[in-house]
Amino acid sequence: MSTETYRHFGRLGLGAVFGSKKLKAIVISGKSSLPVADKNQYRKVYDEIHKAAVTSPAMKKYHDLGTAENVLPLNEFGGLPTRNLKEAKFEGASEISGEVLAEHYLGRRLACSHCPVGCIHIAALREPYEDEAYFYKTSMISYDYEPIYALGSMLGISNAEEFLKLMDRIEAWGLDAISTGVVLAWATEAQERGIVSEKETMGVKLSWGDYAAYIDAVELIVEQPNKLYQALGHGVDHAASVYGGEEFALAFGKNEIPGYHTGPAAHMGVLIGARHSHLDNAGYSLRRVSSKGNFVLRNLQKLCWLRSDGVKSCQVLSFVFLPGEYISRILSHGRFI
Image 1 (cartoon, rainbow, N blue to C red):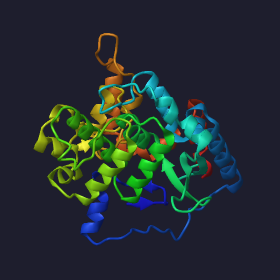
Image 2: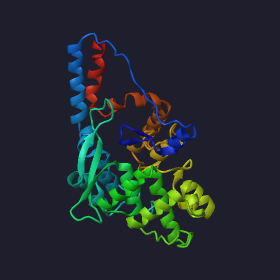
Image 3: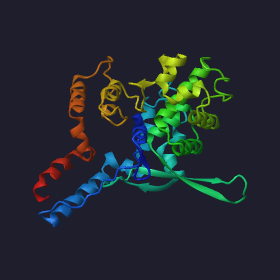
Image 4: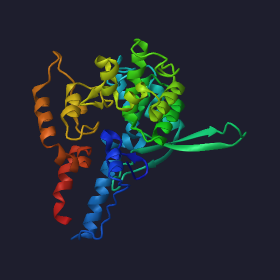
């Protein structure tokens, strides 16, 4: 299910639920606005919030580079799942980083409704037509950290253009990028271990970094011509239940893992969260482990608060990213609005 063109609800089968009910869209349209007691003061506070959100250290990086900014920091401390999580650092991370994508491919920035940050970054991929010289097509491809992890480091792809081509095909086929990447990573390791054969993959030799083979495999997952591709189409948990390899089938509650390998807090949040989304909790931002491998008590307490109050926390998410001194100042202006 798509919203605002470049944002998709791809996890947990929401689009399938829409399809089963023959529901094509939901339109939300307001017909009135809230009165403002002091419009001048409201505008002043609005401008202050906007400036803080866009220029604060916590958010400027997302304005400049998008969520792809997270690739290099996560890779630096070993939080970037690589080759089906056989590793947590990727030697090719710098080539698919937010910095490289912004420098060489960034074509446009967008923001979700009412958000001042504009973290949606759109790559412009220019490709020549095969049968016409000097004619090119330009594809506009939205990219974020999660697809870069799932279709980049998770598959050993370190070429930005190859990642974008794979991403573009997966988007066109209407698949979830995270689940598709994790499924392909499992299938690659399964073929390495001899659990599935090249006959079962119908001649596709899956190997880390071979984006062309992955495109072929994704097309077969869509077409589902045999038992293997039908199993892969049901997700990594189901495929492993049929063929084996459960120990390297990476899923929480049958939902393929997100790209934050930052410790138990992140994994716990995904596993027990209400939405099981990669952004259902802030666990990935908590301190990973203590020197002895146990959680610091204050982080456990914080995690429990995040889980119990998570729904309400989502409503004030914008405040979380602002510098601390702004929050009290903003809230103190409530009498004007």
